[in-house]
Length: 359
Image 1 (cartoon, rainbow, N blue to C red):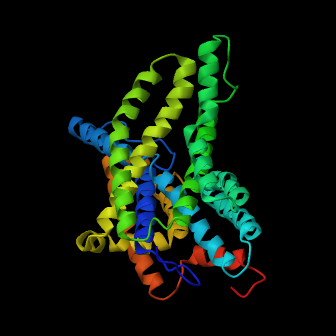
Image 2 (image 1 turned 45 degrees about the vertical axis):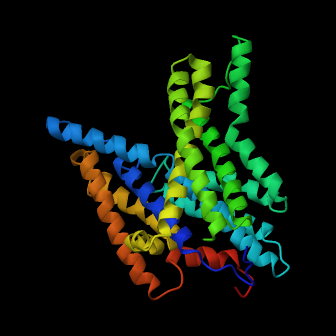
Image 3 (image 1 turned 30 degrees about the vertical axis):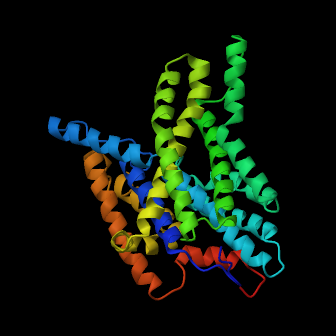
């Protein structure tokens, strides 16, 4: 496989895939009104049916998968930054910890407009796993990723509950419990992205494309039985439903996520597809700026202190709002990157990451 000297070159497919993930997050958040669940009280029957169809399609395709792709690429970016510095004899680890502190600041800013819905702080916490594993071998990193993605804590409680009916789950609220599982999943996706970077699997070689074809086939085959098992287990008692059911839910989402990633990478090799989604490259290069600005825009559109359109927007109208915001953001990204190397928040994050150096 080709080895690069100096900095790793940008991989267009990765930029576009990151843009796809942020776009999907935007559409899901619009349907949720950015965790502000106010919707029209009375709509015609045909619109209710359309709204339900829009909700089912968008959430089936993107909910839980877009953030997983975002996490995968977070780990991949860590590899790029770490390896670039390692080639010059440096260690990116402690600089990365400072970078996570800065990300916590961005998370706080985002939470001001998107209360209870921000995932960046979860990235900060789960991202610590990259610091501790940065010098591990490839096999150890992959094994650790698999362990996190298997959800061992959930299976422990499941088996303990089956063996001892008196066993009780930790006294956590449903939301907090699910967030804890999501933390394991994000850590696993970070490590998987780190491993993909180590193996340069996003580089478009014949061998790598065969790998993505196999990934697509295996993930597609695994999705249906995992989804079916999850549905069956969720209805099979409180302990099993909250443990094995939650783990299986994460697994079926992981399988579908890998279907999306592999399909995107393979389709991107076709000129017509890459030309059709060219705007996503610009959108992905400014992912932090777009992620935070969509929260500001969403709060202004739906919340009472802004336009307060939430009571007037069902799922269909909210999807159209999301698409409009996406198109406007893409236009802004193209304009900005035509004049600057990085997005505004990306520039700040980069400069403050490397404060005290000439980078």
